[in-house]
Length: 165
Image (cartoon, rainbow, N blue to C red):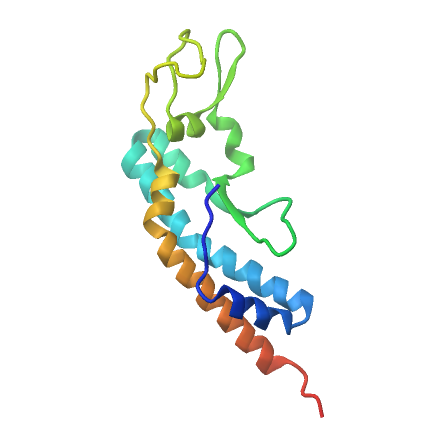
């Protein structure tokens, strides 16, 4: 999991607190989703460029942004993951019945068949961290997008709020 810190977080939080809860949540959800788009685009490009071949293309097509499950109060997030409807194509089952998830093995590296998976076992395939590299490259841009979208949403909500006489 990767975390972003947003500049002006306290001011944004205070401005959101002045809004109706439903409106504030929508502003944050929208901003976080839009902020994930640059990272998603970079991860898709990395899948093709770093992983390559048919597997890289398949991963690029299957990557998507989804709302994070089980969010703590005051915490919002999204995940960049393989579309659940396409996840089955990335599962590999060995002769012994052990299942592996190919994008995970690509991201973190893996040992070869029959070499065990004990901690510290030498990796046969080195990691190709296509999502980590995407986050590292696009985190500042994503933070700016989230911050700007939140302020835009707050200003729009303030304009549309009913006037109190």
